[in-house]
Image (cartoon, rainbow, N blue to C red):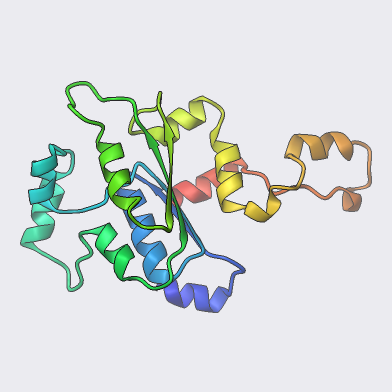
Length: 194
């Protein structure tokens, strides 16, 4: 269905993004669709119960167990294996919080990020003070807009910020004001819904 929409819309570029299990989906769909960019916050790197038990990552065991009992026709349960077998990969940015969770011997987001970083297409950005819910932490720190703009709108990096545009164009006729792409509340809502 996504391939059909992309073929019909013919966008200049395709990006996927998500957090945690949605980060897994962002990398999976980005690779399968031949997207240009992927932005994954705290993604998992596998969906396997035996590996999760081995690594002490019990957060999703019921879902993994169910997936193994009722596997889909095509099961993509190891992202590094998929990335290694995919000839044309998107640029993949993995953003993680590396603050240790109480009771955890190791940072699980770092464990998954290290597995994913075996692919040359993957770059990892780590925030030492952030927890697994790195998106919420970035919002609270006022850093999410810049990160989204930098990764999802790379061509806009040379454009002035919305505040700079507003100041420069104060009093100018509406058609003279050329606003830089901004991460607005409406865009955030659209991203969350999709």
